Each structure stands twice: as C-alpha cells, then as structure tokens.
Amino acid sequence: MKKLEMVYEGKAKKVYRTEDEKQFVIEYKDDATAFNGLKKGSIVGKGAVNNIMSNIIFQMLEEKGVPTHFVKQLNERETVVKAVKILPLEVIIRNVAAGSFSKRYSVEEGRALAKTVLEFSYKNDDLGDPLINDDHILALELASEEQLKLVRKYAYEVNDALKEFFLERGLKLVDFKIEFGISEGEIILADEISPDTCRLWDVVTGEKMDKDRFRRDLGNVEETYQEVLGRVKK
Ligand code: TMP
Image 1 (cartoon, helix red, strand yellow):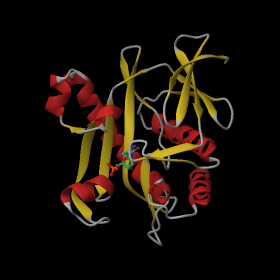
Image 2: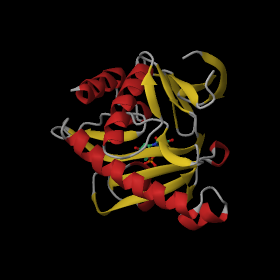
Image 3: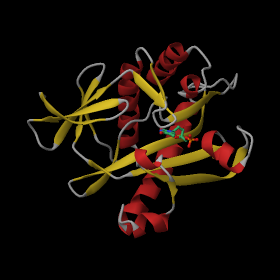
C-alpha cells in the first residue's frame, strides 16, 4: 500500500491518503504532548510501541465483535486502516478514580468507583476538549441518537475486554480514552489504544505504567512503554 499525500497530522500520528480511497496509512510518531500541548517532548520508541500494541488490541476486539479500523500492519510504525471520518468525541471510561476526574470532584486517585463512568469530551483543542453530555452531543449534532447508542455499547464492550486482557498481564485498567469514526456509514473503533490513551497500574506494585510517567515526570518513561508492549505481546 503506497502512501500518497498527508491528509492530517495530529500530536502523535500522521495520516496519509492511499491509492485506495477507502484506506489510509497511519504513521505513529515518538512525539509526546500533555496538557493540551503545553508540555512537549519525545518518548523514544513510543511510535512503534503504540502502533504494535494498538494493532494487537484491535484484532482482539474484532474477535469479540467490536468493529475497528484495523486492516494490516505495514511495519513497526505504519498501519493500513479503513478510511474514517472521526466523530469529534473523546469517549472516556473510568473504572477507578484518577486524573481529571479526581481533580474535578476532589477524590483521591485509586478510589474504586461504585459505578463504571462513561464520559464524553468534545474533541476541540481550541476549547481544551471540554466535557459534554449526551444532550449536548445531540443538540450540536456531533452524532445521531443511533450512533450515540452504538458508541456507548461498544465503549462498555471495549472496557470489559480490555479489563480482562490487561489483568491477565498484571495490569489494572484504571481508565482509557477511545475514538470512533464512520466508515461506509458504519460506526467503527478508530484512533489507538496504547499507554498514551490508557491508565495502567501494575497489579502488584501499583506503579504507573502509562503516559502519566511523562505527564508527571516520574522517570523510566521509555522503559515503561517497552515493558507494557512486552506484556501485551505475551
Ligand atoms: P483524564 O483523567 O486526564 O481526563 O484522562 C482520562 C483518560 O483519557 C486517561 O486514560 C488518559 C486519556 N487521555 C487521552 O487519551 N488523551 C487526552 O488528551 C487526555 C486528556 C486523556
């Protein structure tokens, strides 16, 4: 599959058009940002880790009935995916209090939640990805009622599959963010699932095994990404 011109460059990935209008090539970068781009850096090897890890997970999710954009991995950093139009929504699932949830409601990180939380952010860097609810989404026509229903259903299914998958690898899935796109009229899982987009805590030591090591300057960032990939490959 030949890459043609770049159609989009995000903070962590580039997306290229191909000779097939129904397929894109995604190229993962080592660039890392946090706090809406305020903190910038690079995590050596991150692009390869996120590409390979996402592809393993997306194939596992396909087997469990969640449709995804995955087509074929080309090399360590590049993957052919179905061309989608991304819904401007960040879909976040929380199993344990952490991050912005802990800050917003003043609850200690690590507190178990009495109910799994699904929240949406409006994907808009200029606005700082504000939290929005179902009514806002429908009012702003960011998704239809039918699409929203499916997004919620898939998000919980992804959570169930991921919790089990990571637990088998000694990792507790605290929370994560996913994105969906529309391909030939169908809602499918797109973007990535990686240490950039999940909070993963070691089951035994409680150590943070995700991008919080970069966000919070905890050290061993590269090593942690490699360790997570090693466990995911198991
Ligand atoms: P938060 O606690 O900062 O809202 O993050 C919730 C989850 O979403 C966490 O697993 C990290 C992930 N996330 C992203 O993937 N991209 C983002 O831009 C942000 C802010 C969070």
